[in-house]
Length: 210
Image (cartoon, rainbow, N blue to C red; front, side, top):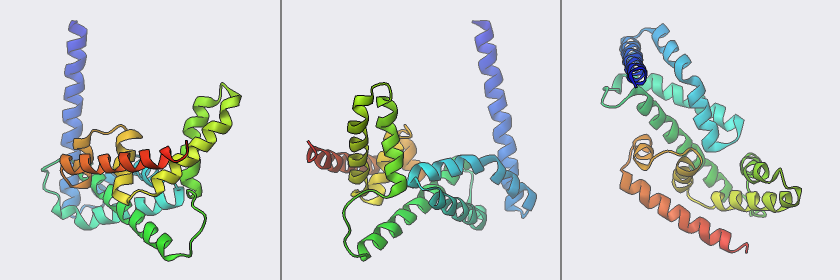
């Protein structure tokens, strides 16, 4: 029991030191210290790329979002007022850049001539892997799993960019509604409504395949 309490105390102390270091880096970067900004990028670059990849699936799109996000951070760092953690502020920027990207992609698709409805390659591959991994021990289920993955991907593509992002952040990344709201710069109630609409649309789309 004593060791557990001591460990928790050490963990809290380490987190406090890390937060203080992070805040010092942010203040230095705000004052124009280029090396401090580069250190912030180094600390968060993997998390930003991972989040971008989770949201848009295709590596080339994720790299574009990664670059645009850190460019926005550089341009807007002077506006950061330490009212939330730098981590939350950064992720809010990444999710907004990803939303802009998804909206542009949706409008480009709407401007193009009609094509057979199917998910884009990167998205379909991502969702296919989910049922395929579960079905791997039973080869007879592979085909069904593949078809289900394609249906889910197609259904997700029919959601609005915000609905799709909220659904994936909740169910694929396991984030709480309040956290999603913080990242998207909106209220928990708005996120809940978006999730409800997304779930209803997905259920209707998937019912059609039965």
